[in-house]
Image (cartoon, rainbow, N blue to C red; front, side):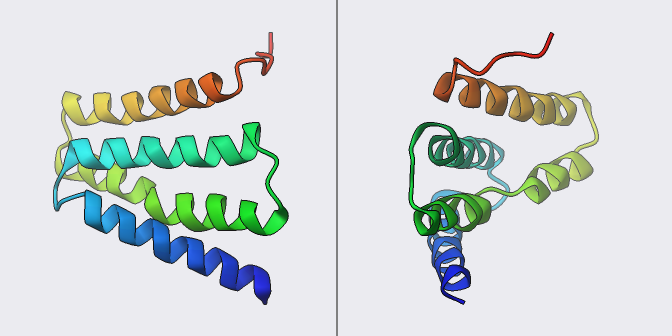
Length: 110
């Protein structure tokens, strides 16, 4: 039960930060907040050595609530054009680049 409360507390913090920083239909804000969430999750998963409760707060709680693929999907659904497709792929590529920058020694499968 303690783990669920820790995740919920992280979720409250992450979702409130997203609400405060990203305006309605703010595609650039959504893009940036999602990348920030990837960076937070990546730091706690790949670089830092957090306790289990800290990891639960920051990754599935905070970063999970702050980021959402549904926003990217809605943008693509509302604007089914080349820009929406580019937005999607830019999000994926930038996310992978951030994770690589956090943990560059990760070996690439050949």
